[in-house]
Amino acid sequence: MAHATLLKNGLIVDGSGQPGWTGDLLLAGDRIVALSAPGQTRSALPAGAESLTEVDCSGCVIAPGFIDVHTHDDAAVLDTPAMLPKLSQGITTVIVGNCGISLAPVVTDSPSAPLSLLGRLQFRHNGMADYAAAVDAARPAVNVAALMGHTALRMRHMADLRRAANSDERAAMAADMQEAMEAGALGLSSGIFYNEAYAADMDELVAVASVAARNGGVYATHIRDELAGILPALQEAALTARHSGLPLVISHHKCAGPANWGRTRETLPLIDTLAQGQEIGMDVYPYTAGSTVLREDLVDGIIDILITGSQPHPEMGGRYLADIAREWGVSQQEAAVRLKPGGACYFQMREDDVERVIAHPLSMIGSDGLPHDERPHPRLWGAFPRVLASYWREKGLLQLEEAVHKMTGLSARRFRLGGRGLLQAGYLADVVVFDPQRVRDLATFEHPQQFSEGIEQVWVNGVSSYTRTQRATGERAGRFVRRNAQPHTP
Figure 1: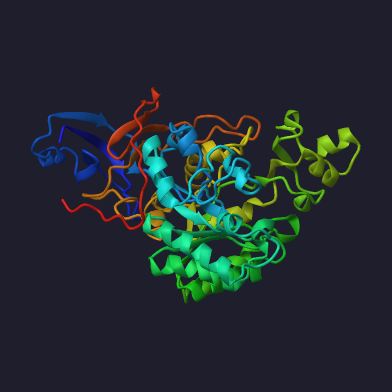
Figure 2: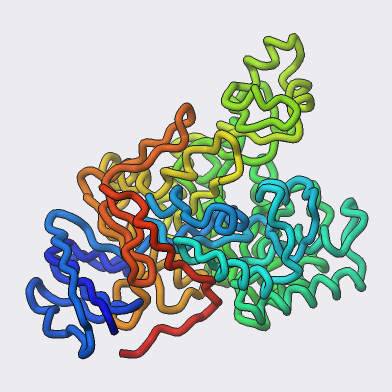
């Protein structure tokens, strides 16, 4: 074991939700070796360690590396493996394949929406094993864990997406799901909100999801309706998970649209009731705007809509739809049609709803950033520091330990990421050190690609990968993370 690192005199917030305490943390190789009171950890230095780097963390928090449970980084980890938007937030693991959208098992040079949210260059992986091998070959700076996307399965096996799958198509999708689970996938994701999967019925979803269940996976879903029909959509998601025998994760829970504002007072009690009979979690991003493909049916003439990109009119990126429509002398819906295919930020939530979801004990933090947008939503660069700055330090909505738990230990447990998410001897050495008084997001809708402040240093699998002064160190120590990897026993 060639090298060890001693993090000294920091406030250790271990990801469990328990109170933090001042102490030292010793890393050696790719593992956490020991935690102790200040000055006592050096004795745990393993035999054979040839050198020791000491890092004074006085005044800083030592926490597990953050786990971004909701990303669309599937292609980004291959195209831009430095992964600065995530690494600079203290994120050490990303979960890809959300909302039914994954690279595998689709092979095409011209992906259509919503798969095009992942860019257009990397649809060359016949299965999850191929994708995992590509991740390991790319050596991204963060770890990558993957869900298999139901919409991707539909696009591979169905010529007509306007109907539910027949028995042969269900069997073909189930076979691909089995291959994915054997390759280490976390489970299945769906996005029946999108037109390309909206026709899927319970039989279709259960046929695929039950394969994930037999292999110990999870089911994450962008539910059918986050607007007026949100309550029955939540019931449908829970029923699908129950019939399949799977834990459920509700993706980016929100009450979208002005007519729906305040309804987290209904949705969260419903989720609590459902969770009494089955395992349920949810993720949330700390903003009142979402971001997805440009769709005229989401244009209501009330909410602000910021164009993040347009293939026919790239010059309109960064402008508001209402201003474009006014300039063109057409309705906002007509302007949206002219701008398609494209993407947009939809300012469709209210802050009190966001706060209720963030404060809920079942919620985890996910960015839901879209790295291939020309002008991405600021959550791509700022979601995790924003939780700490706004919802812990400024608003006091969360305790520090609770905020960290929602970004680490809870996320690892929910998604079966064994050996990660906690500062514990024998666990993988994914660690972030941040300044609790300075940490904050700087990315805005006007200037979305901005480094956050207060992230002092990040280790991925024991390798120093990011520092406040140096930014990326040039080291890329991430790897493909398979479901239920077991922690090492020291």
